[in-house]
Structure formats: structure tokens, C-alpha cells
Amino acid sequence: MIIPCIDLQDGKAVQLVRGRRRALAVDDILGLLDRFRAYPILHVIDLDAAMRKGSNARWIKRLCREAHRKVRVGGGIRTVAQAARILSWGAEKIIVGSAAFRSIIVALDTEGGRIVVRGWRERLKLRPADVIPALEPYCSEFLSTFVDNEGTMKGTDLAWFRQLRRVTKLPVTAAGGIRSLREVRALEKIGMHAAVGMAIYTGKLAADQTGLGKK
Image 1 (cartoon, one colour):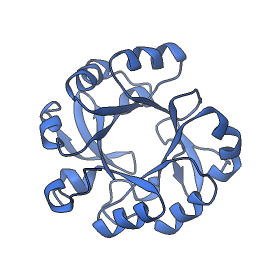
Image 2 (cartoon, helix red, strand yellow):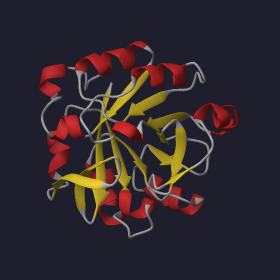
Image 3 (cartoon, helix red, strand yellow):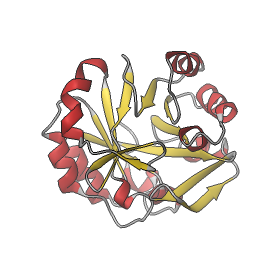
């Protein structure tokens, strides 16, 4: 299944290359709900909150309440109170990268094979395989972004995700550079969803072409 990504920064929906350079910005955030109407799940990430530079809570709240579909929210969620507040807005699940609670998706984003945190600015020595066994009892799903190719439209690393699939039986959503139906289908074959940003925004992967937005 394809899951469109709405990454929020400075009150806009943006797409960044490797989490740093802004390559695309959309002012009409709510308009994306109509654009992505064929997809049953949305990922909404507050990049400002993740980097401790502000908050897009107002937009997240509106997206959760007006989407009329499943919305998963992440970015800078560091406390149970924050998670509970966002869930009260109608979010289906919370995505976190530094803590794990029940009904939460844990983000295991990687660059160079190592886990990255703090808005992908800090690289840890840990690899996903090092922490997944300890995290599995406390979460319902993993989100893994292959940061090396995020926003580049170069395609993702399917071998990396196949390797990750062997580490856990929990649901995994893959992200980072996904640009083609071939990749989406390859990920589906190993039981993974595909979170897609740049390829949808640029029209390379359109819902009416794929039929994969519906499940």
C-alpha cells in the first residue's frame, strides 16, 4: 500500500532532500487531502518540532480532524502527554523515534546503515537490528526511512529493506527515495507498505495510475 507523506515545515507541506535541502513546498496544506483522497492512510510529520525549531500543531490538528481517514503523526513527540493530545485530535497512531509506547509506530530512520535522530542530524552507532528485539514488545509497527536516498528520486534500497524484514515480523512501512511501482510492488511482496513523498508530489506516482492507494 502507498502512504502519502505530508511533511510540515514553516506552515507549508515540503519535501526535503536527505532531510536538509528543501526541494518542494506546497502552501495549500488542506488541499492535499483532496489530492490524496484515493489513499486510506496519511503520514503527517512535523519537521519543525523534530528539529526543535517550532511547531505545526495547528495544521496537524486540522489534518487529523478533516482527513476522514487514518492519519499517523510524527515529529518531535517526546512525551506521553503530547502523544495523548494528538491521539485526541483523531490521529490513528503516533510515530516516535526516541521512545516507545503501545499503539505507537517507532521510527528507525537510517543513514549509512546507522540510526539517525534529532531530525536526522545525529547519527548513532546503533543499527536497527541492534534495537528491534528490545522495542518489539512495546510497539505495534516500525517506520524506516532510508535517509541516504530521501527526496532524491533515485529509488530506494530494496536489499536494505529485505534485510530489515528478516529482523522483525511486525508491520514495517518503508520510506526514502521510493519512486516506482516496481519498488512499491517489491515492498508489498515482502509485506511492507511504502510511504511516498516526492514521487507523488511530482506526479511520477499517481493514485489513478496505480490502483495501489486502495486496499
